[in-house]
Image 1 (cartoon, rainbow, N blue to C red):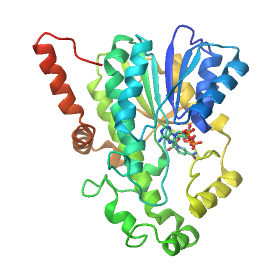
Image 2 (image 1 turned 45 degrees about the vertical axis):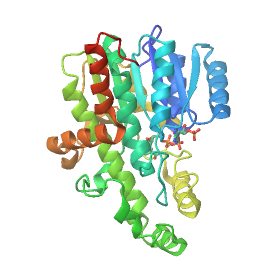
Image 3 (image 1 turned 90 degrees about the horizontal axis):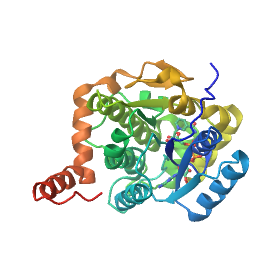
Length: 329
Ligand SMILES: NC(=O)c1ccc[n+]([C@@H]2O[C@H](COP(=O)([O-])OP(=O)(O)OC[C@H]3O[C@@H](n4cnc5c(N)ncnc54)[C@H](OP(=O)(O)O)[C@@H]3O)[C@@H](O)[C@H]2O)c1
């Protein structure tokens, strides 16, 4: 199926992780179709270079960037505020930024990095922008998940932050010998991959729960498996990451092909009104039974609210409203 050439003129799209790989191609193709595109990345330099390259390639000057390290909740909140200060609508939100961490690391908020970046950032950013997305309806949210979610049987509520999982890499979770053993003998059992699979299962549970909550609002939310794509993914992970990227360079598809389903879901009239689905190769497919567990989805939502302080900030906002002041963004 060809991806749509539908014009996106007049639409505002925000793409996270748009300075490389699948996100960069997605941002460029949205700009090519005439959208105003907000590129989000961590580094000022990479953001500037990406914006310049997309403007040059597409002739569309309505491409801008907002810098944020999405593993930090404070930066996600700042990003949402800066976006809302500049724009009063959001037609397409693409939650794409993600990574894998070969050793256990914690974010500035003390949360395991894979869970913080791959799931909690999607959850927090979406919720902070949700009122504006609803006011822009018909609008779309696209969450980049992965078929890696099938590697795990259930979402691990006993250890969402992988404490016991990473301990298999030695007492401090960083034994070089254990990492080498997993890398060469059992890469698919590597604790980092299992933790990554948990985060991608979380993307699906979040997508389906959000679709239910958005029923009747005109906002759709769908998840994507992009395929196995040769990108910078796994960079910064020493030997394990190098091994995974060598493997990808032999077997994986180009970022241009890997971005097709994200672009399709962001632009195609064929998916007008389609929500709560998981797509690969521009077609809806079945995700794992664990991803369809409604009680797990509700439980994850609650846990995510607690870990991001979202429920507390909502109560504060409600209090402000009650007292007759406008809730802060
Ligand atoms: N590649 C695959 O085979 C594959 C398969 C299935 C699913 N996926 C999913 O596809 C998505 C995109 O992956 P990709 O392969 O395109 O990876 P990539 O080439 O490594 O690109 C990742 C993007 O995310 C950004 N990013 C990373 N950490 C960030 C942080 N802390 N804060 C803000 N931005 C951050 C990076 O920006 P900077 O580094 O410039 O800051 C970059 O723009 C991910 O969600 C991944 O899980 C990929």
